Amino acid sequence: MKMKWEENVRRVVPYVPGEQPEGSRLVKLNTNECPYPASPRVVEALRAVEADSLRLYPDPETGELRQVLADRYRVKKEQVFVGVGSDDVLANAFLAFFNSEKPLLFPDITYSFYDVWAELFGINYERVPLNDELRIVAEDYRRENGGIIFPNPNAPTGIFEELSVVREILEANRDVVVIVDEAYVDFGGVSALPLLEEYDNLLVVQTFSKSRAMAGARIGFAIGNEKLIGYLNDVKFSFNSYTMSRPAIAMGVACVKDDAYFREIVEKVVNTRERTKAELRKLGFSFPDSRANFLFATHERIPAKELFEACRAEQIYVRYFAKERIDNYLRISIGTDEEMDILLDFLREYVANH
Image (cartoon, rainbow, N blue to C red):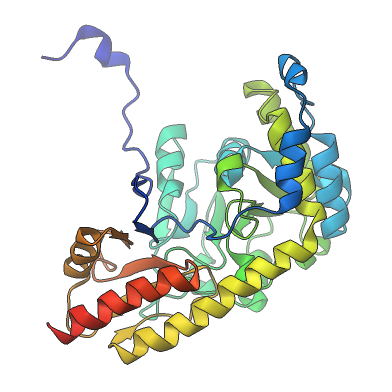
């Protein structure tokens, strides 16, 4: 029975996050988390947070974290915006910049939160199809629009588009904001940050959740023209001034300062990814050349859904999307070498028997 008050409820189809199973013997390769712990300096920073300080609000401008990020990426502090994970940063950006009657454009196979935000905020949008090789075609973005967003590397394909493609999209769309979502760029891509000097409508968004092993701390950031960042701050301070906790800010600062550890764990993930590619090919899998911390794999004869369910029965969790064009692929996060060996051993036996 429908209640009267339900007539005024905003109805949306929510984003569905990856399953978060519990248990000590499972292999969790379904949410693209880093398989290694955060930097020891992050742990030290968390321990150093005084309990009494938690009764006080955090710095609403997150000045110290923005400064270390500015130093790390060689920009001004005024060019940096920080939020509670890149999802928070992107949601603020959707509110701030996509306010046109013309449609927002993004790929048809991409991060599935984009259309959720567009629906929630009442933003007109269009999905632009990837080509048959699952790549972005810059020419397809030469049309009337109210803004553009795409990940690079893309998710869930893992494909990285060269900066020449990004530049071509920017060059054809100087009158709207173009967001490049670089959640996975550290695993083999090249950041679009150098293009900020040429394009004042470019916003680059990154996260601490993947390559910096801090998904649980929820830290994301954007770098762009000072005016763009000013508009982002206007939206943030109109919604929630104190978005980040004191512990998160302290941990974020410590994380950025430990660049050697960051590079060490990224190298580990990349090496394991490349080894896993070679082993999966031997088993009849194919996939785009991933530059992310996951593979988007399909088998030559065994359906992806069957493999997904078989893995899950063995407490090996990968991601399956029951969506048009990609319903015969599995997204497999890169874990430790030991975790990937468990997956590979299971797949060897399963493929041999089917």
